[in-house]
Image 1 (cartoon, rainbow, N blue to C red):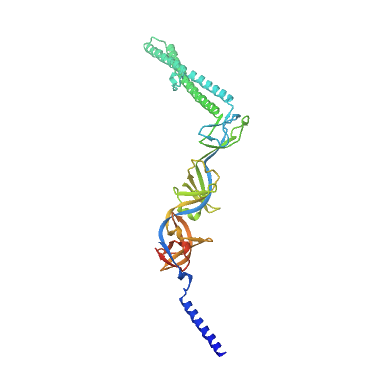
Image 2 (cartoon, rainbow, N blue to C red; image 1 turned 90 degrees about the horizontal axis):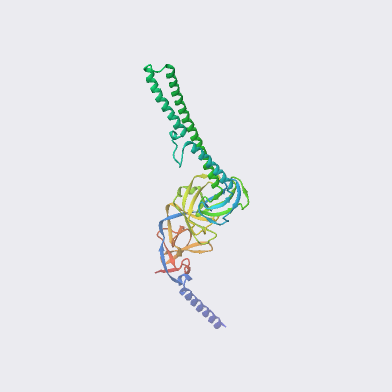
Length: 395
């Protein structure tokens, strides 16, 4: 029995020594057992073109509600909603018979006064050319000539005083008739100007029977149909200019100092996911809205292919006027899991996992706002194979 006990004790001791040796020869952790080949990149501090993220709405460059300027019955509507029109294209045509008659009457009245004043073929007004004035001037000249002869005869006592006084009165009367003729001609000329103005008004009224597009664009709505009667001021259609479009954006007040006219605007719309459109800031509001403490600015975006529509909601990035420094790493160096971004900083022959905050993308690099320092080196390739504390060999 004692021999059996001794054998069991010796066997247990032997097994314990073997296990201790095996434990001493085994690696301390999986990280010590694996060496991974990686490439690295330095964390670089550079000035970055900054962008402000804002939202806004696309609106037409011009949006006009076109109204009738004269009353009348609608005779024709050459356009429909969505029709593309050029400037001065006819949108609605009204009955023109009454306007034509008024224009003819006004022209006849003006022509009658022109004939009375001796104006023909658009010649300028000359008061001395008016027939009544020319006749009165001739009478004055004759009276003055006879008065001079009478004066000579009276001085020689060859003409009685009564006859001399008669010649003098006749000369004075002729001069007054001449002045009256000139004044009458001037009054008639003012009447002619008024008649010509009535001609212009009549011609405009006739022209206004054709309601025209104020600019090139697209018809948004047409509110009347043939047979409708419209009065002056009745809206007949809307016309929008959609190339280029305006993007109206609202910017928080703290960014007032970093936005300026001429800066680039990049934006996206829900209708074209993943596609970026580019515009340029044209207008910055001179004041901040008291209710929202925000600034309104307007950008212009080309729309030659007519893909963008007024009313689209836009998510935009506005280029700031100044560049500020930031820390940049390659996009491939950042691993994001469950919304948390991480990088692996090389420290000797091992890596250290760090949680970071990511800023804006700059080409193939991304800004890191916290978690690393300038000059540190991060794993740039093989990020998916490394873990915190693993040994690495930099290629």
